[in-house]
Amino acid sequence: MEAQFTTLGAMIGLLIAIVLIIKKVQPAYCLILGALVGGIIGGGGLDTTVSTMVSGAASMMSSILRILTSGILAGALIKTGSAQKIAETIVDKLGEKRAVVAIAVATMIICAVGVFIDISVITVAPIALAIAEKAGISKPGILLAMIGGGKAGNIISPNPNTIAISEAFQQDLTSVMMRNAIPAVFALIVTILLSSKLAKGDLRVTAEDLEKNENHDLPSFFTAILGPVCVIIMLALRPVAGITIDPLIALPVGGIICTLATGNAKNLVSYTEFGLSKVIGVSILLIGTGTIAGIIKASALQYDVTNILEAMNMPAFILAPLSGILMAGATASTTAGATVAAQTFSPTLLASGVSGLAAAAMIHAGATVVDSLPHGSFFHATGGAVSLKISERMKLIPYEACIGLTSTLVSVIMYLLIK
Image (cartoon, rainbow, N blue to C red; front, side, top):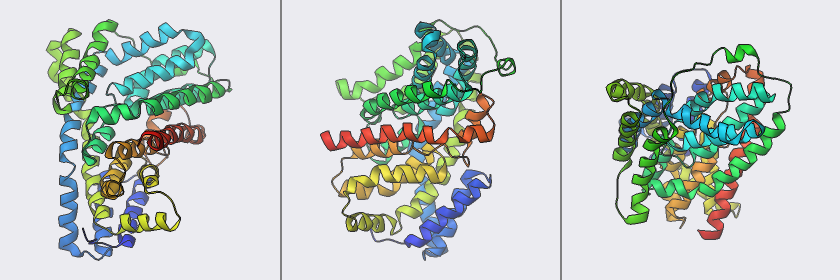
């Protein structure tokens, strides 16, 4: 397709969006305005710009529908106490001596079964704070364990970013999730090593940090895990038995099973409303993301980037992890960054002979490297979960980048070995 907009226009539009996001303007509006300005500056004209924005947003609707229904599972896991029960069980089984390992693994699993990464950290935080106080672990140490575990779980989860990437490359969701299983394990190992180092720091958990914890009746571990297990089984039927159950069905069914199994049938409606409140924000964000992705995709950017890589004698597949890293850093969001990268560069990557599954995995892993910069909500939500000041939270960014870079490098190595 012939480019409708210039690379300069697309980049200026993206830069405007980034600056406004840093200024704390609502991200969806930032992306929409950036797309509009970028399209006009890029020479498309007002009519062409608006129609391209609308087409870009429309291309996100299948992902948004699946994300909206995933809220039923997320709401059930959180409101029934299932997520907390899973976390507590893992921590109890691994013991206080392996506190860092337990916290990282617990957050990884909570995120991997479909809870958003920021919600996973917030869910595990009260448990992590309590065990950290007993074990004498620093707050930066436990927070990095949760964030790193969440990053590892995020690239193997049916979360919005995974759904959006699988849609962009027209790949089976389960296959995209499983492709990054090995990178996730390596990310977890690096998380444990780095968190163990930080755990010896002086910034310890105090009684004031623990006052925020709330105790309530939790379901049994079996009933807590039943919903997520059913989701995994349903999604696995396609690669295992050739039976396709779309995430649009599997995710809400898992949430309903979780609600019924824990004896909360009467609360099903309120739980689904809560779940919707947790996914509506990211759904709206993806509409804004779609508008600017449409402009970038219709610009000469992908061709110019490809030409630069060729001039530097770099292989085409490098575009996958590189675009994930840059776009997630620009938007300070795994979901937005991965979506923009996938929507923009999927045609180029596929035309270059890179398999859709491998490209999706590399973009996804790359989107976890610098996705937690201060102009995004994840930075502040996770810091607040353990009462860290902004200056203290900033010190964790290089460690988080190392964890994301680990999964990215392993994902790239897997592509080189198995294509």
